[in-house]
Length: 304
Image (tube, rainbow, N blue to C red):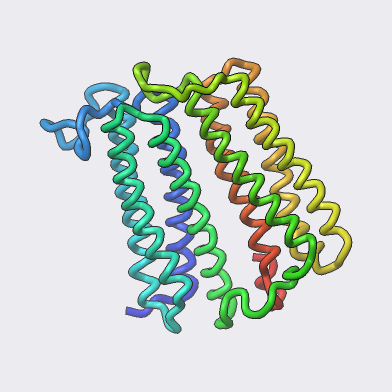
């Protein structure tokens, strides 16, 4: 069976959406206090295939069942990548990484439950999700280029390879990653642990929130630096203009939600929005980095 490039792109996009959705459902498990809603693992109940006897069990069970959808989507990416002609090692490699990553997430999820929602295992669970979203983003971008052209992805020297703007973009990406990591420490110290008896990190909330805030403001400064540097050349403007605009919008929105949730006593709704948008902030930063690494390609590819 041969798979067309447009069809493979749709499959990779479906996997991307599924991986993002499982992060949202996973956060809802924690925010509703349903982290230990299932008494067993991998089954939710020894006596029932599907246990919805309580609200917490139902929420946890739905999240576990949705993992099957995610697994099927990434397995489809891997299987279809082998059927592409010409075969692309980049697409095969990233698809296989997604399959292995989802398998790792299943095992980490077991550790989370069996350790009574240990915050470090929860942090690992989220950060691996961020890694998988990054791979899925790259997979979609490579699949788009494969659909638009048979030329190798990122062929030749990147247009901004020796440019100071490209180095500043790397700093922006690193700082955004720092914000995500410190944000997990805030979450691990906060009130929404997934269960009333769950252990929390030993950080004082005011201290760890202050560190998180500093990281955010450093990221904001880096964003403005990159934005100003990108205006100096036509190449940088054409490559980074739209991605930087998208990053700026989600960064500001996330900052507003973050401050609002802190001063309003971290209500569940705002925390859920904050978690969902944290993934968007990282993806937007990754999008800026991706565009900074593009080489001389057809103009139709640069706008993907």
